[in-house]
Length: 259
Image (cartoon, rainbow, N blue to C red):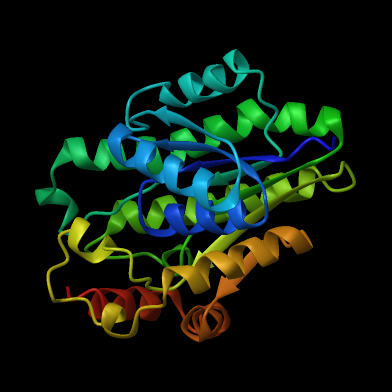
């Protein structure tokens, strides 16, 4: 009997993570589901196993804690799981001027959006290279294209993810492993409320559907693309930032974010 491939999805309890999990289960991937809320994960596990006949493992973990990513890696080792696809989806944002921000929230944002993503990639990448097979999808954003007054740390974190992913994608060329940075525009996942943006952001007036973003990401992953600009707004921004001064792009970002 052919061994089923295994995908690990962080932030799997809702939003894009839940969409990724559902789409991968539909493709008959077994899953490792990672998020803080164990109850939600268990419900998702039961639903996906029942609907698609796959096996899912629940790994409750708060990736804002130092070295939490190592706990996820050890979980897979303890269960004898070889990860074929890693979806580094977990992340969150925050709004407000940096001088007045909640420092702990900014710190935890960096831990989740950058450090955990980087650490999980470092943990699983060597095994993928050794097996000459594996795919990693890192969630970046349209925010990666410029500085973001009013969301300075979030924009910077997504710029890191894009740059890091592109670099590692180049490093592993020819190894059988690919790394993709998914850069969607505003998506209807509840991000705006979680980031305390209120009704100020103009970008979320026509937010993309999570399913469409997840499908685009998995398509780019399958094709081995280093970058995926999902949606017309993101593609337009990726072109415009090459033509206009950065002083203009950061003013535009501030206006769109309601600053």
